[in-house]
Image (cartoon, rainbow, N blue to C red):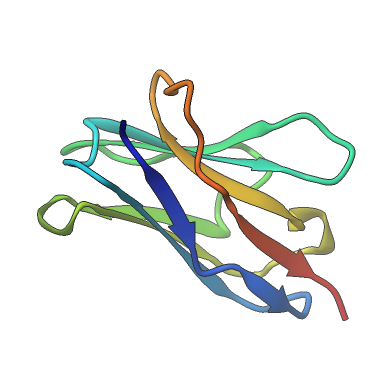
Length: 112
């Protein structure tokens, strides 16, 4: 069974930065997404990157988040800058279309 592992979350002040990482137990998929789920809210799509393609972002994070991937290392990264309290959420990675299995996520808390 494929495993998805997210890491890099933490507590950061508004305006700060974090870099999230995602890896899979096998080869990273052709199209990979980041999602997030804030407390009491539905999971929402954040960003997508296809192998050899340009990233695409939700309007709420465009200009602040940068998505990249290293296929050789089976890794995907989400550089998050200018973080806002509303970015507080559990962040998940998955392929597109998403697998039924999800990782544990990594918690990002933006608070002063």
